[in-house]
Length: 246
Image 1 (cartoon, rainbow, N blue to C red):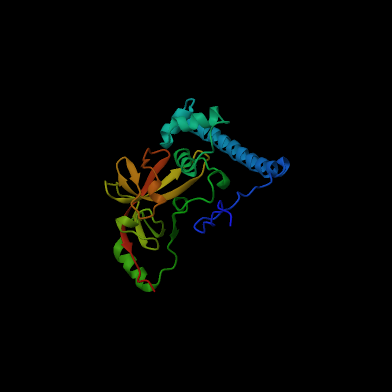
Image 2 (cartoon, rainbow, N blue to C red):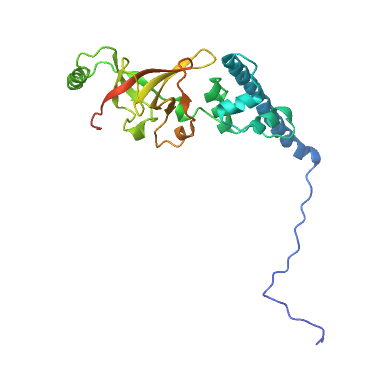
């Protein structure tokens, strides 16, 4: 028997490192080039959106608007925008939240692919006219209106004021003759730089309109200033009827 023989060590696994053969350079470069092209297209689209937003803000301000003005108006970091525009090779694409805030501040709408998907819930709120209520609901509404003029009736389609006690699907009365006070739930008309407009439902805290909600997406919205031009209060919610859920 050889004296220099050592028994096998079964407590170890003796293995050779695997050797991977390198892929041809052209196989790697094809998907990489496609990804890089898609990224550059995204950033080009976002830069074009920023320019449209900047011009819309300039029109509102009646003077030339800088990227710093745009950042200040939307509550974003000015260095994020300036680096993105001035150093395109070093900056990544803008985040969806940044795009959303600029949309909200300027009224300029970005294509869904520029913000990473469809519009968030906060853009889909609204109301429906109350049509042909049943006799029981009609009687309740007549008692609440009680001869008041300029009272509109809606079915609420928004979660923006649910924490204030108004749920989606509630029937609400909107009095257009009342002067809003702090803490009132109001309906406001918001006008965009592109000529469109929409209704929103918010809590009035002069001079701001605030969301009061449990919806995490809606909570991201910055307060809106009631300026009498781009944001107008239509009326005050005075009454609400909530039908029993089936």
